[in-house]
Length: 382
Image (cartoon, rainbow, N blue to C red; front, side, top):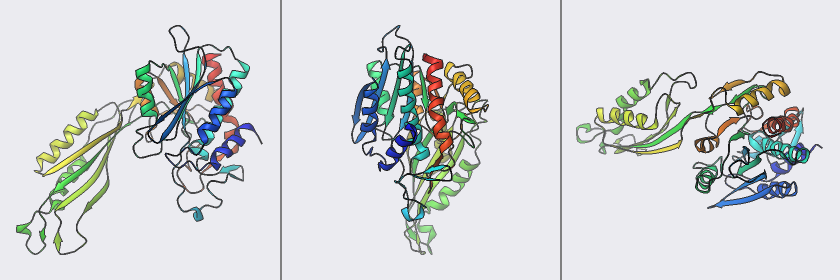
């Protein structure tokens, strides 16, 4: 069994459902410490994070820092009986490794560790620094104590990163056929619309918040928020949850609640989207309250960036593909690192099975991934 396959299997066996790390970080930290890395454990609340570095200290003139970023927490497996093999027992079938986290993203984390071990063994005096930042709080609903908090720590202490490769599963059909060079921002809100409860036979004595909200919802759904730009598609608006009523068919409800979300690029700002939403709700005379949550701003590593061009070249040379350079998909922890002035690119295995029953990664891609990550190290720091 290869190093990367063995480590991936060992990580899958650890039931690290977010925000638990189930010993994953200790296992990896011990390996990297033996390889000569300096390992710093960063625990915030109930969340474990660590930052391992090798090379010159973080001082002016010490050279650039290349960081790899990943997470060891996973989403719940769902009904284990629905899996063809136990979700936390790695199983190989037909050239695929099955298990929760195989693709998202314990396979990538294992590949990063092996790549870093091999790189520093071959080039112990490499220029600059290479590092690995891991968290157990990427898949959770808030991400408050994971990379978000680590980024705050880095900002306060002056920790510098120049380039960051995120191991999120980016590929579509084969390793390296798509890389993420940015991500859209995510702006959410919990909306409460207040009405007056009453009997359905006497609507004149009540105020139905469903009826009141319906025209505003239609306008919000039809609104063209922006046209997007060369780097990002137009902003999208979605209602993900809508609730009202007492459960009785003869009672007009007194309140309505809804969850809304914007995914947006650089053609709009969060402040603009909030203001326009409020204007539409006020236009329709709604008695309402909004509780906004900005999960992350959009970020982009522009064409010509050193990291972006390096990753593209590595995908061409080692994977034999000319990667699509995309800003699509959801969010990633790269949104917390990019504001530090870091070039961020995401490169990982095929994402078709992530969060699903029978999540899996192709063995050939898993075996190839350490060489891909190591090549990025060699071209930037060798």
